[in-house]
Image 1 (cartoon, one colour):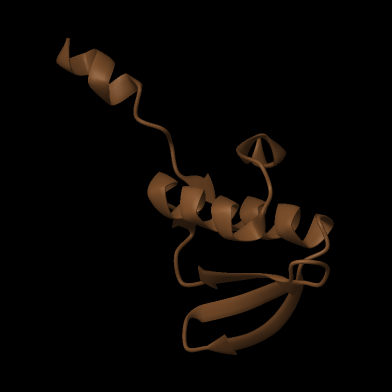
Image 2 (cartoon, rainbow, N blue to C red):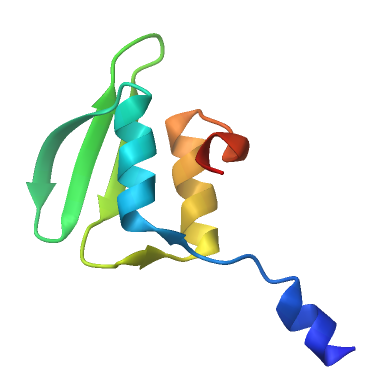
Length: 78
């Protein structure tokens, strides 16, 4: 039973893949302050996503927040 819980936990996404997909969907690098980078997509509404660049893998909860900020769907990242 406990092993099923660990198997169902979503895996983190690699930062490189996340950035590649955001850039492919029209997001542009705007600025960086310390380890946090800001990406923006113009349109209506303007979408801004802030990503911590010092991590090689983004935890699933953080990834879900980035998906919500970007206005994209989770399937776009798979």
